[in-house]
Image (cartoon, rainbow, N blue to C red):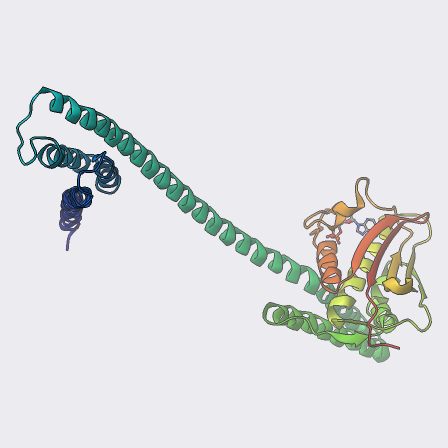
Length: 375
Ligand code: ADP
């Protein structure tokens, strides 16, 4: 079927729809007037014969439209004249009856007009509401699409960020390995250590990718963890960065720290992020001691906490909470996503992550609830 045929069949459809509506209106006028007549007749000499005819006119106009409404008025007027006004059984009129019928027909016409107006206003209102609803639904669908795109984009940025650190370490260790192999005589011990680190970092990158993939499908793997052990593993992971940036690392782990429940890789990623930020902040400083402190603390019944403190320049001016907004960065090639991901991870574990200045530099601290099953 071509376009013009489709259009003409649509017009035909609309025409037949209009004809059905008109037929229904006329039938309704007949039916309502008939019912009004039958009921009023059955009352035998009612004091006021008009109310049911009025009701018939209102119903016909509302459901059938103005023309069926006028037809109902004509039918009602004739019925009143024929059945209820003397001489009964005749359409003949003399003066007082004409006035009586006019008294009925004029307000009936007015009512028909009001009902039509009301009907049009209601239809317009309903159409406007439907259109608004349609627009809102369209807008919501658009918003959902944009937010899906943003999520996908954010996920891409976060993968890039999280995998970047181990990959850089792999490259640095690869360089170091070549250097030791090129030495005369080759320093095989150092080369072996560098290869060991490459394997370690590669494994870590693999674990991150696996976790990110798993994150898209399942919930994080929650296991019972000792934060002290987790933090000391991070110490090993950051060893190279610490040496390269001439940073002194101090650790102070609280004894008998209660366990927490969480995802090992995600929580480790948070500590690595905080420590890497601290190292980067301190390496901006030419002079002064570069001291990174990682501590664990028991915060009473509230939970356990890890504190990462540095001796860098301190937090940028403004509200410390802004640092946790996605894409906030003061670094030239920063992504501004690390702290936002870290906070999301900690909050997903039922904890809090916050930042403040200290007399030495900056403090980033997170708190996690104690695992209830622990001693
Ligand atoms: P990025 O490191 O890519 O900039 P982050 O979300 O990790 O992204 O950090 C956001 C910003 O928070 C940094 O650009 C920096 O301004 C500030 N910041 C983070 N850690 C520290 C710190 N230890 N000392 C001072 N400022 C920090």
